[in-house]
Structures are given as structure tokens and as C-alpha cells.
Image 1: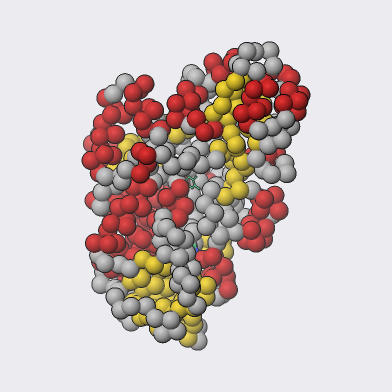
Image 2: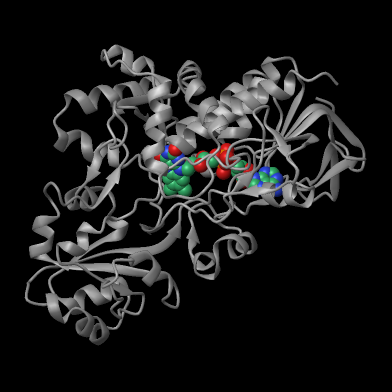
Length: 488
Ligand SMILES: Cc1cc2nc3c(=O)[nH]c(=O)nc-3n(C[C@H](O)[C@H](O)[C@H](O)COP(=O)(O)OP(=O)(O)OC[C@H]3O[C@@H](n4cnc5c(N)ncnc54)[C@H](O)[C@@H]3O)c2cc1C
């Protein structure tokens, strides 16, 4: 590649905004189909929300299903998605759903070819067949193998390079303006098209307020870079948002785990395959703590904790009401949207056996108190008195004593947290057609502008596990091929 120069145009066939799952997959497929490509990423590292995810990918007719003799069909997957989406709104894009189910398996297989390892398939209610495939050891594997494939194909990825504007020639999008490190605006021209793949707006205050209202605007986001820039760029250039008012449920989640030494081991294929073998053949007391250490996503405690007698307090130790069952919402309404789950020895006993798991967790499926005690000492504290527990979590002991009066009849107490109210992802995406061209108010394609992943969600409803990641990769793969097939 020529050195990049300020105020001079850097010419490519395809310019991709965002180096998450959709953007990197699109880059690879555009390049493999003969286009020159550049990927511009605003963050210091690549991966986006894809790298924060649990990493489940739901698909039918996969190698995993075939190996187990499970007969399945994309038509059945298409039909089963209806059950997840019922009551979710008046619009679902069935044309995009069709694309998704028809290409999910080939996309999963392509990821496996570049080195990603999946475990499964796991069942999930509403799916008539087990279809959920979980990435091992964690979603860092997507990022690692996509980066390696981009390197192999010599695709430039520029980090710390936020795109701020689209460049137009009459109605046609012909390039972008971006900042590069400390430089002023730098221009990237696109002969064939610009692909918006800059993720959702879970951290985009204005878009959250506009589409989801003031309460969700206060919720934390898992990925602080999910500011919705791609959606903004689309809206400023005649695009329109579909299903903007839908968001993945507000959920209470623990803060992310600090990075440990095991997580710095690259997710090599042989390592992931050994872990899959271990999950099937080693005793769980040996393998579970090991697998838990690889978890990089942000786990969410289940309401079961409160059914087992736990209480919720804010970061001052004051009780947060649980009566309406909307724990995340009530936490968001506290001054700092931060708190702890407190329980005693009797609850602890229940939280170590089915069905009272603390959270679902990749690899081990269901994580119990003992799993957290061994792998997440940062968010799991134990004390012999409420006073001692108050000191451990940094709140006034009198305040915590008042809040925990109902559960004080014990000689062991636990605090899990901090927990915060999060909006996991937002669902509103730009309207697109099945060539991934962004559509204007009148459903006409905006020449030169494409979108994939969350930016190109196009009204498709992706409820259930594994459909969002699936869409990021399927739409990235097809969008990369679609842009490349255009003549200059
Ligand atoms: C905790 C959590 C768990 C999840 N687990 C699952 C799961 O198991 N299964 C599932 O199906 N889905 C899951 N999801 C959802 C799924 O991860 C996302 O829907 C998917 O990864 C979106 O991919 P994407 O490529 O569209 O966006 P991203 O992966 O977010 O990539 C967008 C990239 O664009 C960059 N960017 C943003 N603005 C700009 C700009 N102006 N210029 C340049 N770059 C920019 C961002 O920094 C980011 O790197 C989960 C989400 C979360 C938060």
C-alpha cells in the first residue's frame, strides 16, 4: 500500500468503516473477490462488540450437527425464528432472515476454515433442533483469526482512525473523511463503495435518548466504543433506521473480569480443540475452573439469586427494591448505577446446585457460586459478619446492616459485584436491500453506500442466542462479495 498522506486521496475499491466481526469478514471477502480494501477502526484495537460477545453462533446443517446425525434445515430455522420474535414489534425483514438462515452454515464453516473452533450444537427453547455453536475459548478467537486472515491477504487495518464524514459526488457516496492518529482529516476514496460496519449504539447517548428514551440512555454499555457512528453517518446521508426502538433487554451484569495470564495465550486452534476435548472427557472439578478463567465477556446474574434470598444494595449499601422484578431498571435509577448482591450461607448452599445457577457462562454453560469463588475472586467476597463484608465492599457498615436485616441470621455472608444495569446491544439498523445497499426514505438505494452487521440490521429481528453474531458474519461475508461484484 502507498503511504497514507494527509489531504491527499488514498484510493481503494472498498472502504470499510469498523473492524468488528462484520467489517473484517467483509474486508476478507471483498479482497478475495478482487477488490482493493482498507479497514478504518476508531478504537486502539480491533474487534468491537464482537470481541466482547459470548460468541454463540446459531445455524442449521452445520458440520457439528451432521457429525451427531442431527437432521436440520434452513427452512426450519427460518420458521423457528418466528417464535422468538413474536410480540417484538410490527416489522421483521423476512427477506434478510431468509439470507441469514440460508448462508449461516457456510459462514460458520468458513470461520472454522480460518481456525475458529466451536463447541456444540446446544439446544435452546423454540429451536426444534440443537443449533447453538459456542466459540472456544472465547470471542477473542474471532478477532485473532480474522486479523490473521487480513494479514495473510495484506489488507490494511488502520486503528485510531475514526471516520467522521462521508464524501459525496452528487448523490453517490465516493469516500470518507477520517482522523488518523494525531493528523487532521485524511481522505479515503472508494471506487466501488463504502461499507458501514461500525456497530450498534449501546453507548451512543443521543441515539439512545432519541430511539429508546431517557431511562435506557442511562444504562451502561458493555462496549464503550459502540457509539452508533455508522448509524449517524447513514442518517446524515439520507439513510433511515428500522426498529430503532428495540433494544436487547436491560440486564444486570457483573463488571468485566480483569485480564489474567491464561487470557493472554493466543486462541490457537490446537488449544481450543484440547479444551473441547477436556469439556467432554475430564472431570468437571478439574476443567471448569480452567475454562472459567478464559471468559472475557460480561456475565449477567440470573433472577434466581433473589429467589434464593439474596438482596440488592447500591454502592452506598442501601437496599434497592426488587418487588417489580425489574432489577436492572431499579439499579439504573440509583445515583451511580452500581451495586452488590448480598446473601448468606443458606442462600449460598442453594446457589451451588441445579437449578440455582448464578449465570450462564460460555464453555461451562451454567456457572454456580463455587465457579465464581474459584475464577472471579475480584467480584466474589466472603465474610463472617456484615461489618466485615461492608469493609470488603467499601460501604458504611451501619447502612449495610440496615439493608441486610432480613438475612442477618447467619455466620457467613457473601457479596457479589459490582453489578450494573446494562443495555447489551441496540437493535436499530439502517434499512438495506439484499445487496446490502443502504436505502433512503423511499427505499431507493443510496449509490455507493452499503451496511452490514448491526449497522445493516435492516429491520431483521434477531432474538434468541447466536443470531446477532451469526448476522454480523453472514452479512459481512455477503456484503463483501456484493460490493466487489460491482464494476467501478
Ligand atoms: C456481552 C455481550 C454478549 C454477546 N453475546 C452474543 C452471543 O453470544 N451471540 C450473538 O449472536 N450475539 C452476541 N452479542 C451481540 C453481538 O456481539 C453483536 O451483535 C455483533 O458482534 C455486532 O458485530 P458488528 O461487526 O456489527 O459490530 P462490532 O463488532 O461492534 O464492530 C464495530 C466496529 O466499528 C468500530 N467503529 C465504531 N465507530 C467507528 C468510526 N466512526 N470509525 C471507524 N470505526 C468505528 C468499533 O470500534 C468496532 O470495532 C453480544 C453482545 C454483548 C455486548
